[in-house]
Length: 215
Ligand SMILES: C[S@@+](CC[C@H](N)C(=O)[O-])C[C@H]1O[C@@H](n2cnc3c(N)ncnc32)[C@H](O)[C@@H]1O
Image 1 (cartoon, helix red, strand yellow):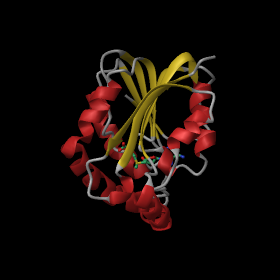
Image 2 (cartoon, helix red, strand yellow):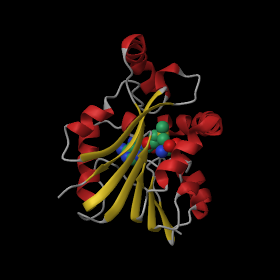
Image 3 (tube, rainbow, N blue to C red):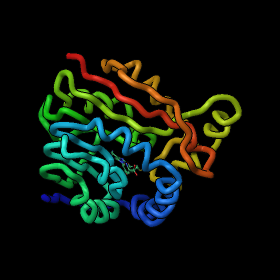
Image 4 (cartoon, rainbow, N blue to C red):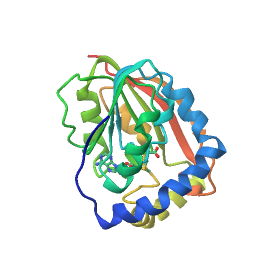
Protein backbone atom coordinates (compact mmCIF):
# COMPACT_ATOMS: atom_id res chain seq x y z
CA UNK A 1 0.00 0.00 0.00
CA UNK A 2 1.24 3.55 -0.81
CA UNK A 3 0.02 6.66 1.04
CA UNK A 4 0.17 10.41 0.27
CA UNK A 5 -1.12 12.93 2.85
CA UNK A 6 -1.82 16.63 3.72
CA UNK A 7 -3.74 18.52 6.52
CA UNK A 8 -7.37 19.03 7.75
CA UNK A 9 -9.73 21.86 8.74
CA UNK A 10 -11.55 22.09 12.08
CA UNK A 11 -14.86 21.09 10.42
CA UNK A 12 -13.22 17.98 8.99
CA UNK A 13 -11.79 17.03 12.40
CA UNK A 14 -15.19 17.45 14.12
CA UNK A 15 -16.87 15.33 11.42
CA UNK A 16 -14.24 12.62 11.81
CA UNK A 17 -15.04 12.40 15.55
CA UNK A 18 -18.71 11.39 15.18
CA UNK A 19 -19.26 10.13 11.61
CA UNK A 20 -17.59 6.69 11.84
CA UNK A 21 -19.60 5.63 14.92
CA UNK A 22 -22.91 6.95 13.55
CA UNK A 23 -22.31 5.30 10.19
CA UNK A 24 -21.26 1.98 11.71
CA UNK A 25 -24.80 1.65 13.15
CA UNK A 26 -26.26 2.31 9.67
CA UNK A 27 -23.91 -0.27 8.14
CA UNK A 28 -24.92 -2.86 10.73
CA UNK A 29 -28.60 -2.13 10.02
CA UNK A 30 -28.19 -3.12 6.34
CA UNK A 31 -26.19 -0.50 4.49
CA UNK A 32 -23.21 -2.85 4.25
CA UNK A 33 -25.34 -5.22 2.15
CA UNK A 34 -26.07 -2.39 -0.32
CA UNK A 35 -22.33 -1.75 -0.66
CA UNK A 36 -21.57 -5.48 -1.08
CA UNK A 37 -24.14 -5.92 -3.87
CA UNK A 38 -23.02 -2.83 -5.73
CA UNK A 39 -19.26 -3.11 -5.40
CA UNK A 40 -19.25 -6.66 -6.74
CA UNK A 41 -19.53 -4.81 -10.10
CA UNK A 42 -16.26 -2.87 -9.67
CA UNK A 43 -13.47 -4.18 -11.89
CA UNK A 44 -10.12 -3.26 -13.39
CA UNK A 45 -8.42 -0.03 -12.37
CA UNK A 46 -10.77 1.46 -9.80
CA UNK A 47 -10.96 4.84 -8.05
CA UNK A 48 -13.13 5.56 -5.02
CA UNK A 49 -13.62 9.29 -4.34
CA UNK A 50 -14.32 10.46 -0.76
CA UNK A 51 -13.62 7.01 0.67
CA UNK A 52 -13.93 8.23 4.30
CA UNK A 53 -12.87 5.62 6.82
CA UNK A 54 -13.31 2.82 4.28
CA UNK A 55 -16.78 1.36 4.84
CA UNK A 56 -16.73 0.20 1.20
CA UNK A 57 -13.22 -1.23 1.23
CA UNK A 58 -14.01 -4.84 2.29
CA UNK A 59 -16.45 -5.20 -0.62
CA UNK A 60 -14.00 -4.75 -3.50
CA UNK A 61 -13.44 -8.17 -5.03
CA UNK A 62 -10.51 -9.76 -6.83
CA UNK A 63 -11.93 -8.36 -10.11
CA UNK A 64 -10.34 -5.04 -9.11
CA UNK A 65 -6.69 -4.78 -10.17
CA UNK A 66 -5.47 -1.49 -8.73
CA UNK A 67 -7.64 0.31 -6.20
CA UNK A 68 -7.08 4.02 -5.46
CA UNK A 69 -8.84 5.34 -2.35
CA UNK A 70 -9.03 9.15 -2.41
CA UNK A 71 -9.87 10.98 0.82
CA UNK A 72 -9.15 14.68 1.56
CA UNK A 73 -9.86 14.52 5.33
CA UNK A 74 -6.61 13.46 7.00
CA UNK A 75 -8.44 12.45 10.18
CA UNK A 76 -10.56 9.96 8.22
CA UNK A 77 -7.63 8.92 6.06
CA UNK A 78 -5.81 7.49 9.07
CA UNK A 79 -8.62 4.97 9.57
CA UNK A 80 -8.78 4.38 5.82
CA UNK A 81 -5.12 3.43 5.76
CA UNK A 82 -5.87 0.90 8.49
CA UNK A 83 -8.60 -0.73 6.38
CA UNK A 84 -6.93 -0.57 2.96
CA UNK A 85 -5.60 -4.12 3.32
CA UNK A 86 -9.17 -5.49 3.57
CA UNK A 87 -9.72 -4.97 -0.19
CA UNK A 88 -9.13 -8.03 -2.37
CA UNK A 89 -7.53 -5.80 -5.07
CA UNK A 90 -4.02 -6.62 -6.33
CA UNK A 91 -2.74 -3.28 -5.01
CA UNK A 92 -4.34 -0.50 -3.01
CA UNK A 93 -3.25 3.15 -2.76
CA UNK A 94 -4.62 5.68 -0.26
CA UNK A 95 -4.27 9.28 -1.42
CA UNK A 96 -5.26 12.83 -0.58
CA UNK A 97 -7.14 14.67 -3.33
CA UNK A 98 -10.16 16.68 -4.39
CA UNK A 99 -13.02 15.35 -6.50
CA UNK A 100 -13.31 18.78 -8.17
CA UNK A 101 -9.83 18.47 -9.67
CA UNK A 102 -8.75 14.84 -9.89
CA UNK A 103 -5.00 14.47 -10.33
CA UNK A 104 -5.25 11.66 -12.90
CA UNK A 105 -4.95 11.71 -16.69
CA UNK A 106 -8.02 11.32 -18.90
CA UNK A 107 -9.39 7.77 -19.24
CA UNK A 108 -7.30 6.29 -16.40
CA UNK A 109 -9.95 4.12 -14.71
CA UNK A 110 -12.31 1.29 -15.62
CA UNK A 111 -14.51 2.01 -12.59
CA UNK A 112 -15.06 5.02 -10.33
CA UNK A 113 -17.16 4.69 -7.17
CA UNK A 114 -18.66 7.17 -4.71
CA UNK A 115 -20.81 6.58 -1.64
CA UNK A 116 -22.49 9.49 0.16
CA UNK A 117 -20.02 11.98 -1.32
CA UNK A 118 -21.89 14.24 -3.76
CA UNK A 119 -23.95 15.67 -0.87
CA UNK A 120 -20.74 17.18 0.52
CA UNK A 121 -19.25 18.71 -2.61
CA UNK A 122 -19.29 22.47 -3.24
CA UNK A 123 -19.65 21.97 -7.01
CA UNK A 124 -21.09 18.50 -7.70
CA UNK A 125 -21.46 19.12 -11.47
CA UNK A 126 -17.76 19.87 -11.74
CA UNK A 127 -16.86 16.74 -9.75
CA UNK A 128 -19.13 14.63 -11.96
CA UNK A 129 -17.36 16.02 -15.03
CA UNK A 130 -14.06 15.00 -13.43
CA UNK A 131 -15.35 11.47 -12.79
CA UNK A 132 -16.41 11.30 -16.45
CA UNK A 133 -13.01 12.55 -17.61
CA UNK A 134 -10.95 10.01 -15.66
CA UNK A 135 -13.12 7.05 -16.73
CA UNK A 136 -12.19 5.32 -19.98
CA UNK A 137 -14.94 5.20 -22.66
CA UNK A 138 -17.16 2.28 -21.62
CA UNK A 139 -16.04 2.65 -17.99
CA UNK A 140 -18.64 2.75 -15.22
CA UNK A 141 -19.43 5.07 -12.35
CA UNK A 142 -21.01 3.23 -9.39
CA UNK A 143 -22.87 5.67 -7.15
CA UNK A 144 -24.64 5.39 -3.82
CA UNK A 145 -25.95 8.78 -2.64
CA UNK A 146 -28.55 10.17 -0.25
CA UNK A 147 -30.82 12.65 -2.02
CA UNK A 148 -33.75 15.03 -1.64
CA UNK A 149 -37.04 13.17 -1.13
CA UNK A 150 -40.52 14.29 -2.09
CA UNK A 151 -43.40 15.95 -0.22
CA UNK A 152 -42.97 16.84 3.45
CA UNK A 153 -39.58 15.09 3.68
CA UNK A 154 -38.19 17.22 0.85
CA UNK A 155 -39.32 20.42 2.61
CA UNK A 156 -37.77 19.19 5.87
CA UNK A 157 -34.54 18.46 4.01
CA UNK A 158 -34.51 21.98 2.50
CA UNK A 159 -35.00 23.51 5.96
CA UNK A 160 -32.39 21.27 7.60
CA UNK A 161 -29.68 21.75 4.99
CA UNK A 162 -28.04 24.92 6.40
CA UNK A 163 -27.60 23.27 9.83
CA UNK A 164 -26.61 19.90 8.37
CA UNK A 165 -23.92 21.62 6.28
CA UNK A 166 -22.45 23.14 9.42
CA UNK A 167 -22.55 19.97 11.51
CA UNK A 168 -21.54 17.47 8.83
CA UNK A 169 -18.66 19.02 6.92
CA UNK A 170 -20.73 20.57 4.13
CA UNK A 171 -23.32 17.78 3.70
CA UNK A 172 -26.46 18.98 1.85
CA UNK A 173 -29.63 17.06 2.79
CA UNK A 174 -31.41 18.07 -0.42
CA UNK A 175 -29.21 17.27 -3.40
CA UNK A 176 -30.87 16.17 -6.67
CA UNK A 177 -28.16 13.71 -7.66
CA UNK A 178 -30.19 11.96 -10.37
CA UNK A 179 -30.99 15.32 -12.00
CA UNK A 180 -27.28 16.06 -12.01
CA UNK A 181 -26.53 12.73 -13.72
CA UNK A 182 -29.27 13.22 -16.32
CA UNK A 183 -27.77 16.63 -17.20
CA UNK A 184 -24.32 15.09 -17.67
CA UNK A 185 -22.82 13.13 -20.59
CA UNK A 186 -23.16 9.88 -18.61
CA UNK A 187 -25.59 7.20 -19.77
CA UNK A 188 -27.62 5.82 -16.87
CA UNK A 189 -27.35 1.99 -16.73
CA UNK A 190 -29.04 1.17 -13.42
CA UNK A 191 -30.97 3.11 -10.80
CA UNK A 192 -32.61 1.92 -7.58
CA UNK A 193 -34.44 4.11 -5.07
CA UNK A 194 -33.77 2.75 -1.58
CA UNK A 195 -34.00 3.91 2.03
CA UNK A 196 -31.01 4.33 4.28
CA UNK A 197 -31.61 2.37 7.52
CA UNK A 198 -31.12 5.34 9.84
CA UNK A 199 -33.19 7.32 12.32
CA UNK A 200 -31.89 10.60 10.81
CA UNK A 201 -34.84 11.54 8.53
CA UNK A 202 -32.87 13.98 6.36
CA UNK A 203 -30.64 11.26 4.89
CA UNK A 204 -33.11 8.43 4.33
CA UNK A 205 -33.87 8.62 0.55
CA UNK A 206 -31.04 6.89 -1.26
CA UNK A 207 -30.20 6.31 -4.93
CA UNK A 208 -27.91 3.43 -5.86
CA UNK A 209 -26.89 2.69 -9.42
CA UNK A 210 -24.44 2.78 -12.29
CA UNK A 211 -23.72 5.19 -15.12
CA UNK A 212 -21.50 4.64 -18.14
CA UNK A 213 -19.10 6.89 -20.02
CA UNK A 214 -20.17 6.32 -23.60
CA UNK A 215 -17.38 8.06 -25.52
C1 LIG B 1 -20.51 11.37 4.32
S1 LIG B 1 -18.82 11.06 4.06
C2 LIG B 1 -18.86 9.50 3.19
C3 LIG B 1 -17.60 8.71 3.40
C4 LIG B 1 -17.60 7.33 2.74
N1 LIG B 1 -17.69 7.41 1.32
C5 LIG B 1 -18.70 6.46 3.29
O1 LIG B 1 -19.49 5.91 2.50
O2 LIG B 1 -18.77 6.32 4.51
C6 LIG B 1 -18.41 12.21 2.75
C7 LIG B 1 -16.98 12.05 2.30
O3 LIG B 1 -16.71 12.94 1.20
C8 LIG B 1 -15.42 13.47 1.40
N2 LIG B 1 -15.26 14.71 0.64
C9 LIG B 1 -15.69 15.95 0.97
N3 LIG B 1 -15.28 16.84 0.07
C10 LIG B 1 -14.59 16.16 -0.88
C11 LIG B 1 -13.90 16.52 -2.06
N4 LIG B 1 -13.87 17.81 -2.47
N5 LIG B 1 -13.27 15.57 -2.76
C12 LIG B 1 -13.33 14.27 -2.36
N6 LIG B 1 -13.94 13.87 -1.24
C13 LIG B 1 -14.57 14.80 -0.51
C14 LIG B 1 -15.35 13.68 2.90
O4 LIG B 1 -14.05 13.91 3.39
C15 LIG B 1 -15.97 12.39 3.40
O5 LIG B 1 -15.06 11.36 3.47
